[in-house]
Figure (cartoon, rainbow, N blue to C red):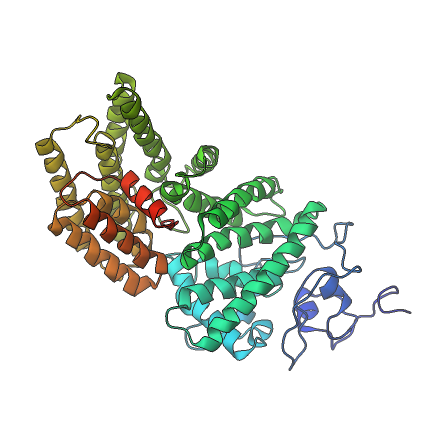
Length: 495
């Protein structure tokens, strides 16, 4: 009978993707019917991979038999690994992810040479920068790489993410490969969005992951603010849908990864995005989601202290309230002053419950940055109203930098968790007046850029240098840094 219309006979020479998914394969080339129907990468032994494109015959299966299950890798009773994507398990053992051997999955090794370089770079460098966790527990390795074996959208996303991270040192050939994959990513994204609109729920998780990773990609590219804000808004809508999936489809570990990544990007983008866009509803939503994980003291994926992290939007709101009140009446209201005092007490009384010394130090740096941010609220615009005397303000800044210096001395520049320090360092840098304080921030940013290779880290330092040169000896605050970025048409999100 016809290949697309009749029964499909199981063969021992099917494509690698069908073998992996333990599905029947009609052995159609260059792409079999099963891969076309499920928007997968159809790869044959000894052949380069072919990107699957949507056709009129590739409508999503509505009978529920091919519904994807998105879960973390867990050992089963037979010694294998649990499912990551697709109707069947993706065996982590077949990936053979090791620093010595590289990535040996048949589908991934079929990539062209330049694309394979990008994938190797992702595994050995980019994943380490994205999360401080070791590879054995890093979700950028244990969750996203297996999904990429059977989902072209995620594969293209990871290759582009690696390429923009690698851009400063990469060859022209790899740069060209990066933008070729970027084009494929946009095409795959359009296809998945079309499927999502048709209520194909199995597309929600990869679509959400790709959209959130696009925020990291645009941040690394130093792209326009409008693009970043669009991705963040889309992430919120997709996350709302994904969180409605039952536990049989979306397990708790993957659910936690999605929540943490969404909150991480939304909250740390506030200083950059909110200047032109009202994102308070997204910040509030991110805080609510973080509170749903209160059983944890710090983020599993990124290592930030959850209790402190969820206070960043609250501090930001109070700073903006001070600005408005100073502009309208020249004074800060008693209610706002009381709220600042209460919040300051909450931040000061916070204690870390972590057992890792580097995690504790990083959390204390966030704690000091939040306190400094609040101190700046009282002096948002000194030329309008001086609520804190020059001597008091100078003493406050000096004390904050003394504590920061001691903490940074105890935290090695090579510590993996250092990659989440961009936000607190930017807060300190925006308030740095003396050359000595600026030197502390400058030195740490230089080290952070050398170890992480993230372009937005280098660009943050450049914005701070511009701020320092324009406001020598005058009070500054994080809001001044936000305005400086806006003046220079830069949208730097500190993640």
